[in-house]
Image (tube, rainbow, N blue to C red; front, side):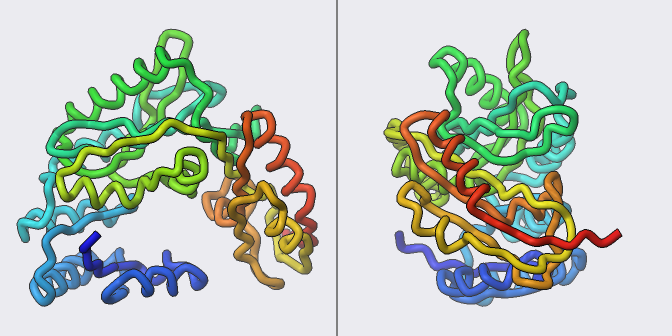
Amino acid sequence: MGFRIWSVWDTSQLEADFAPRVEEFSEQLLTVDFADETGLRETLSRTARSHGIDTVLHCGHGSSVLPVVREAWRLGLSPNPPAVYERLQADEGGDWAPAEAPRVSVETLTVNGAHHVLGMTAQRTTGPPHFFVTGYLHPAPLTDDEQKIIGTVVEERLTASGYRSGPAHTQVALLPHGPRIVSCGAHPGIDRIPLLFEIARGFDTEAVVFTGLQGRRPVVPDAHQYAEIGFFLLPEGRLEAYAGTEDIAVTPWVRGARFPYAVGDWVAPTGDPHARRAYVVVEGDTPEVTHERVAKARQDLVTHIRSVN
């Protein structure tokens, strides 16, 4: 697409098996401690000036967002003023919604102030009492009217924030009296949701971020099937042995899988965000089929994990 990319990562957040991919598509991979705001901003400024950078994007979330966008705005390299992100972060807690309320994630792309809904993804959970996130289904099984109402609520939130350009990921709770926004972040979809779009629609939500920078509005194809990601539900402890990953990888309907643990590694429990690093992605003609296929993959993974009290 004609873009050259310089990537800036915190080494503590860059996993070993992912780093080579980042390096492959980057002119340079720069590492810095994101907790060091001065060092982070200096790295951005130095890189931008040295290489003639046109735009700075923060593609994640957390405490490093504001330092990055403030420096990018100072350099004239951000399409959105810092106040936009400050408003979105202030709303990040969102309106309260009961844990049992179904939730959908809404991916949008804003181009020159116009908000475009790319699609909606349903959240799978453990159910009561904790409602931990266990996966996502795309597209969310919603009626056209439900999609329009949800999309309108999200667009109104983005407009109120002053957001002018870029991707956004919004979580919405579906309540009896209507949708309620739980959180809204100025970044692409999380937890491999972009992969679900590719499988279900043949649409790349990450590449479209760059077409948006070119001022082109997205054209999203209809979904031709369902795609679901299921996180492996593992107990907390030290991994002593595992089997089944090779069988899962060659299953015809499996479109992606990751088990980043080695023997001796500490395994995060269900409910911990780190537990979402291990997952399987499947395709199917109905939500029921994808749900069954995720369950089958979870059964095929056999682990021996020693609990340490």
